Image (cartoon, rainbow, N blue to C red; front, top):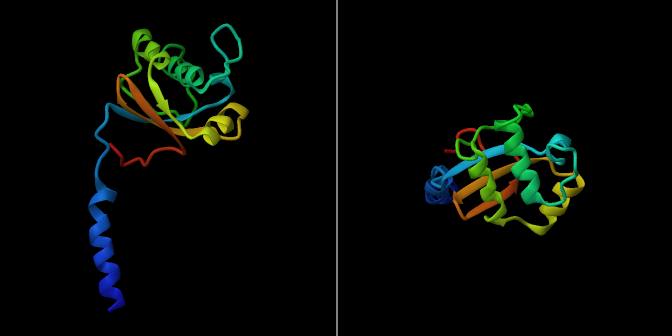
Length: 128
């Protein structure tokens, strides 16, 4: 009986575990010290600015950390400027940890040109 119950729960959860991401883009980033200063060396003090610099480093300056992943969206200056307007959903504790350097690996879910979400850790390599 216990095995049947576990199998039933697994079957109910399976669809939600295997659904692909259907937003605009999803990428992983290693937010290193090079992402926390702008191109003139001025320290950045917001997660928004750090994420934008990470993408500029990736696409414009070719300063990529080994764990940085392409996103196919923030490839131009105009697209990266959207970071300044987008609503960014992030847990306050994660935001503090990114700013103080104790959280460096993040997954960025870009839902559309107006909103994104930042979670700790790199995305599943099989996520779309």
